[in-house]
Length: 156
Image (cartoon, rainbow, N blue to C red; front, side, top):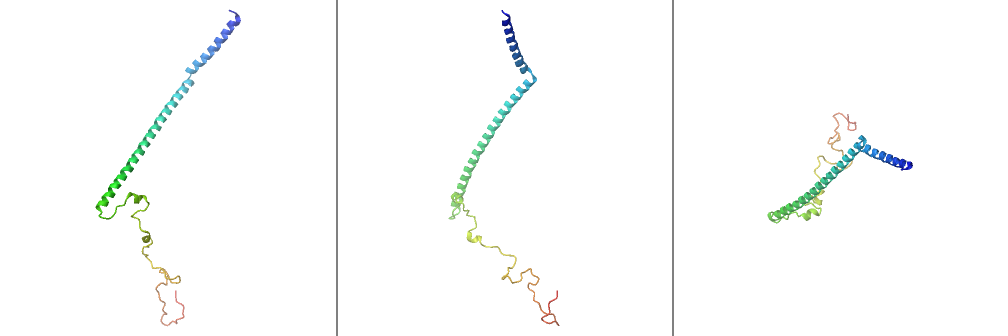
């Protein structure tokens, strides 16, 4: 072997040794271990997040199914009550689901009765010039005192 070949082989082995040393040092260094630990924890957190999302989706899917079942049960109970009311009320028609869905509530006060006002707890004025109930002069008649003329002003 010639000297240039030995030098070239030595340089290649030196570069290979530096690369292997770097890789081995990186694997065994505390920074590399911390990096791998962080990666492992990140993967674990991502898996837990995925499981949680799946549980939430399953929960709300089951909730929607139960609400639909509840709605169907409510309709069945309403039909049963309406049928029973129709049979037991003797001629008075029951309130049907279609009436409720129309937006008109049979318990609602009819329009012609809705205009009725409750009684007032005071007497309203019959004209704007009339003295009101709270006026100091309401219901009082001014009579002149004996010995005074009719044109004398009243005393306070």
